[in-house]
Image (cartoon, rainbow over all chains, first blue to last red):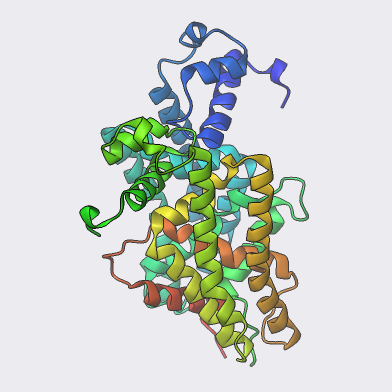
Length: 195
Length: 195
């Protein structure tokens, strides 16, 4: 992405996401953002209403991206395990395509105002329910063996969400390869099947 | 834990860990820590030399706890899969016994000075190598089926490290039960074995 091709607003957004990730939301001032963009603090307010609103927009934009990717997969008329696999690959794709945004989405929502935090949590729960539903469906069809769909969902999302901490865009695996490998580990585990 | 029974130094430590987690290291001032403890900013320096040193002590204390738990397990004369399982349970135990410290250890090390960051990364790599070695051993004995011990290690640690984000000490599972469940998922995956 070449910064000169971005509008000022996009540039502010990108810098804010990076700083919120690097320094945390409480550790980032409007002035820090303005300085990193190379404008006066006051000028920033021509583009963003407040730091709180910026965080709100950022986490909602991430949520939108997760929903946009997952919803069509979940609505497909397809067998449950291939659907589950596609969902894993899609979730990894959203994370790896913007690691900073994934980090901010995962950790900085805690700094939203109480009402917004509640709205955020409801959306996140709704998203997680898509994974929970596919796991329940797999259990009903006796394709998935777990006694606890809630913890199984947390296991899946834990394995996937941490990816933003270590994924290297120029590393050995592409995002899609990593998603496929993650699906393999999640479905079949590490232990060799002896039979 | 009753605060009046703690020494002042322990109290500062505990408050700093909580604030570093909640607000991030850059978002927490020495004054914030002093205020939360209920002393003057200046008095804090009787107990801690600097905010940087405090972070350094905190992440090293966490690293010590991980090593103390894992090293004896890895040195046991025991079959590889039970050893791997015990290592997973122990790792979850360290995380769940101090969620704030686990969060700070996982994310705030980025704010160490460059030399300390390097020393920290070396210790963390040494720790992760214990998991990598047990996975390699399992592969050599044809008990573990993965083509990539590096990504298998990242998969295991991803699934475990995210636990600090959602574990509830008063929730449905104890730390040990969760560790066992995690080991089960990691070893056998979610897919029902058909044979």
